[in-house]
Image 1 (cartoon, rainbow, N blue to C red):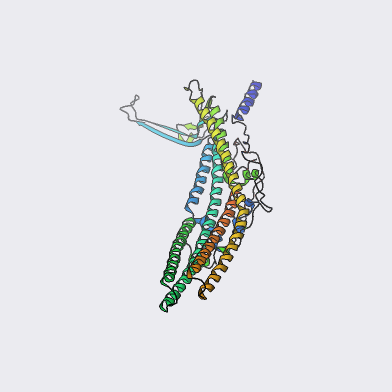
Image 2: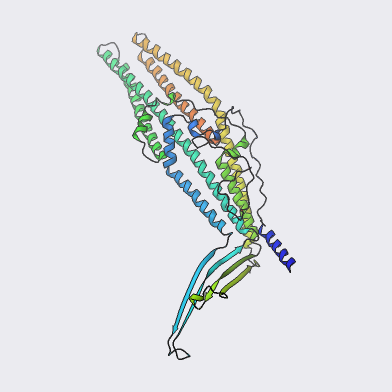
Length: 495
């Protein structure tokens, strides 16, 4: 008999550790093993905090305010808390639900209804605890469901980190756009003031008979065009500020607005630090959106285990125990103990193919998640590759555009001197001025594109959103089975 009990205990122990979750193998990288160009040397983007990358004090305050107040980010963070709570609910199914209860009943039967002809009063008391329908997880169904919820929680947590990185990049990009449009507005205003003086001078020369009406009309056209540009950039600057307020999630404090207005435009900004590209495989641990996609894949993998376990019997236990007595003073006396034990086993004999269909659904969902995971990696590789390809070309293009601005400035000065000396007509001045305006505005837009490309590269490489950077934990294999003890509530690093 003792050997039989030991064997039964061993079998139950083996079954309790049973799991039908398939062994997880990370899908192969659907990209090249290196980027098209070198990314330089230095610390990885994920280890560079946003305060180290964005050194403008005004921008740093804007980012801090957005991380604290942005409503979209707040929704994402609350979703993580919801997923964490759901995981705890699923994990709690591994343990019995025990309820305490106390019961008292007093019955009185009057004498005219009593068989003894006398009034009868009876009393019944009980106190104890009850385990309500606890399912033994012999085949790992509940643990598979808990593991799926755990991976979903980790996925949501990485999604929140990705949202924080995106918000930091959005605020920086919009701030630089505001600086660029404000600098373009100043260029347009300078041009309008110069055109206004030229118009006044040309009108004065017309009254003295030293120029023609054609020259005056040309000067008016130039001034009206510049005034129109001023209105356009004024609108863009105001809209940029509206977008910043929306991203920040609160009105810009007056002190911060004054600090922002003191910045001398995008050209005066300190260049963003260069970040190295590393290797494509680094993205697996650096980019939170890829980590999130892999957690979703692991959740789908765990669902297969739950679907497989549905083919096997389920055993539920209901039990209670305590003391019962017909007198309160003898409730805890010897011999008053009562108990009830009700095991129940359910066999899936005929389900109309539902279990097979559910398993097929779980297997297809895993294939879908594999495709999504690989697509996420390809998209990440594309983002990094594009930004790296653009980095060198922007440097070449900016140098050439700066030379063009200098050449147009010399052309404008020479044309103005020739017109004032009576050698050339005013049309040459207008042509030179229009070329100079276009070159200056394009240089600002090109500088903005270069800055935004660096922001894109920083984000694409998984740039850290924390102030002092975010350290990447050492690789470790993902956990598939939730232990019977308290589960880890922090993300499990992936290998």
